[in-house]
Length: 319
Ligand code: AMP
Ligand code: MG
Image (cartoon, rainbow, N blue to C red; front, side, top):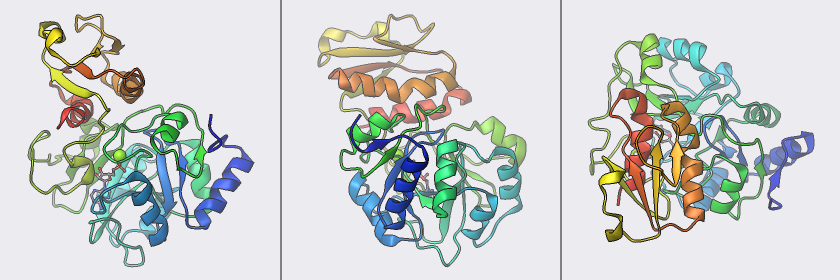
């Protein structure tokens, strides 16, 4: 443990609140991944997030709030669908994009919209309540690299972070699903922890981005920039890891597979997409720590349940 990591007791929370009120940043656990939070009303504090992460300035941030009332205050319009989705899924791993209220500063290239969610993590909620601030918070890692699912991951990726509240390992281990409610039909901006099936039960039809792996072209949402979630090693996504001639690859070579896919992988994750997602980033962090040069990844099934995992793997594999 480094000095930056503190337990989420009263003293730790008080320290975090002091730092946030002074216009700096604090990393905190959520049920998805660890976030790097700043007062959403402070442009200087938000600037500190971009500086620490080396995040491109166009890439906007999700604002975390303690509950529905706080969310509505940040929105210019609050659609009926947002009420229904919030009632069903908040606190939880669903981010809603709505029209931004005029008193909230513009974050990144998002001109007149804001992305909001209520995290389902006791420490995150206590921090939001104790600070009384909406917290703009992207994942607490250097831009493009693997998201942190433990406090130690945060410090390794961002050694200069002033403080990390340690809430243990994240239960979902993959980012929230981002849904745009400013379009006639709700539009999926980022597949994530919450499944499309669960969302459709509330909203009906959902528009999908042109192609989950399409390249180029300006994208409406930042998580959608092509290379992202990437370890230092080269990631190769393959149909069957057993068919690959490993002698032609830069070594050491590691294999990331899932049960039943027929390989004794260096890392074998669950064949259940939710459990696989929960362990994916930790497995990539372990392989990076082991200094492997190539990670051969068994392509997961092409089904909707695997959408978020396939999205992250294809971005980790992008050049
Ligand atoms: P990260 O914080 O690293 O998980 O990435 C932030 C995510 O927030 C991106 O992937 C976007 O999908 C989303 N996001 C934040 N603000 C907006 C916005 N105003 N419009 C669309 N997407 C947004
Ligand atoms: Mg991120």
